[in-house]
Length: 168
Length: 168
DNA sequence: TATTGACAGTTCTAAAATAGAACTTAAGGT
DNA sequence: ACCTTAAGTTCTATTTTAGAACTGTCAATA
Image (cartoon, rainbow over all chains, first blue to last red; front, side, top):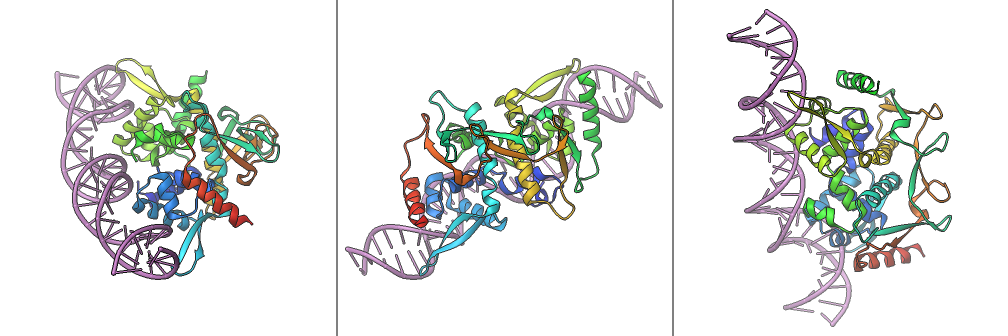
């Protein structure tokens, strides 16, 4: 599968993966949320090659996640800052951080702690249902085809059959 | 940077990216949450090459995200099912789906809808603070070095200086 | 008995992406 | 004149990925 095919897929995971689903994009975004904005700063703090960094920044700008803002004329220089679309990636980054905190820390403990300015406490992010506010788990969620669905695949039907039989 | 170096980084994003930060791993996990469990079913529903699928499944098993369970003897065949560590990836998948739903849908609308069995309503996932329950935004969060932090980088110090000056 | 099909991979070559280093352009300071 | 900062671009070598074909086991069918 090509990257371009991914954006066209009738699946919100695939389309999002087309934007952020590679080794570097997520790390570039992490730096954005840590207020890094300039080419050489990204390069220094990530150790990414300049070639790839230029490529990834271009991609993120193309998808409307970052915006290029001039911060000086002569010579013209730009900063890369998050758009609203980019800021909306925050829950993805935070859930990634949290999973890493729970499952990938070494004996020294968490690399970072997060303080909620609103309540002034150290916190973890929790994903809840927009309707009832309860924390979400995979088992409590049922999936329905939406208006933009592809016709349901026989593979999934078969696998769900099997899963149901196994539950008995 | 090599993949192996990524797992060692003192950063929960980097370590998580080492597990799920490639084009295919997230899509394989999507299928897992849709109850796909067998090699040929993954292959058929994703269109991934068999070579890469074998490689990714091996990686996910190695990281403890999937477990290989025999479902028949003679010939011995295995299913890949999510461990608890794998099930804990659900908030990541859901936040990815949600971002795609908001920012990447075409005119036909969402490919999938989610029903919360507990309250029986269609919902969106919302990320909240574990302490006060308020929805989280990037601006309301302050970052502190934790016990496993690397010594703070001059690049970040400089960038945060600049960000503060720009705010005035 | 021979053949076909399901399943879970492995092996091969060609194409694409990435790493690592050097080079470019443009202006300001010493 | 020469050095520095900044934001890229260009080059070659290495690694990953795509795409297709092949292997090994067993069960069911002709």
